[in-house]
Length: 146
Image (cartoon, rainbow, N blue to C red; front, side, top):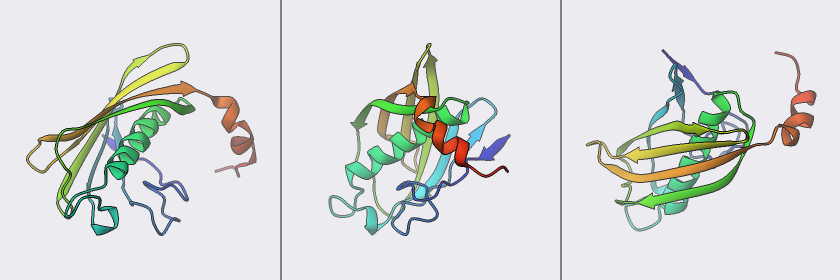
């Protein structure tokens, strides 16, 4: 069973309040695997006809962080490694898949991939996220009850 990850405000990758957001909708399944299907357009262009590398890095960073948050950890990114294997074309369907690979006392490790329509891995990455609930305490205490 998949559930949609809530959009959050002005996020560059998935925020619904940001008119410049990439606008990606993400889902997490019962095994904690985060997925998304999306298409990038000229607003995300780097080399002619292809996605800017910074956009694909931002997508992986946001998705890996959200995967960790969906597992119940309040984290900040500490390290992000991105491997560009093939250029991401514009205006073609892409698939994202992210998972947690290791959980230590304060460190959570993740991996992620952006695949082309034929399932070829175009961009892959690894992330290291550090538990930091103290950073979010004020935000969480000021939220209105749901």
